[in-house]
Length: 314
Image (cartoon, rainbow, N blue to C red):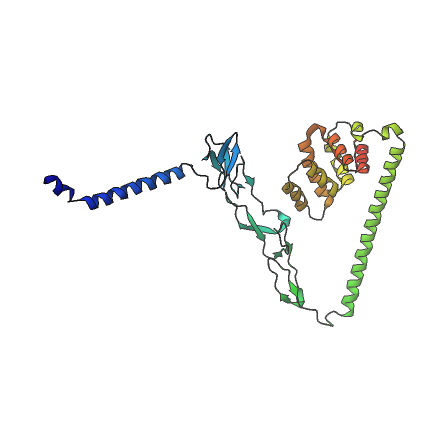
């Protein structure tokens, strides 16, 4: 009688308590498994026969996993670096810089471990490119005619049409004289540069013509002495030019941002752009820089420029 009375006193609430306790234990176990890396949230990669979990955005891989379907050791990107996607890379990418003086940019959103820097045009500048803007141009100033449509980050200023009769005959004559003088000066500079280039070409042709034919057929690399290029940088940069120096740098795996930085540091001055990039390239090449430069130019079909470098170094 006693046993029958006890069993009928709490079967319902005891059963409910037992079921709830089992659910809580099961849920805690699942959460712990996920926290310990038993599931790869961002995908996997293969390493030495194991399936390892990718590190999340904002992290980079420090060491691989030792058991399949688990994470290795992931580390947060250092300051000035980011990783915007799940990765197995051992380092993060460098953040973009908006601080080039001549680019007209400023920081819109600072770099974060999981996102690169976002730049925008400074006030009074615009960029009409549909892609990421590398540089922003100054907005046009309308002066006395007034603004029809203000400059925005994506469009230049639109000025009002000039009023007929706004310029008197004296002002027009002055403008014509100034334009004529400028064109005359430009013509003198172009003539001087053309004559200088022509004389240099004749000098090189005469020098090459005086060499024996069997030497001329030799690979130019064999004619180049191993010398320090520092004292010849300016002459070499002038002989190569920006376009070919850029191709030499790209072939030598110089990073694109480094090449673009040289161009942005000297807007409109190809000689200085070429000289800065040449210095960076020579520093990376080391002792064999002279021979490697001539070899790359010759391989690209730029034998004339390769011969010019040989003449400079000789």
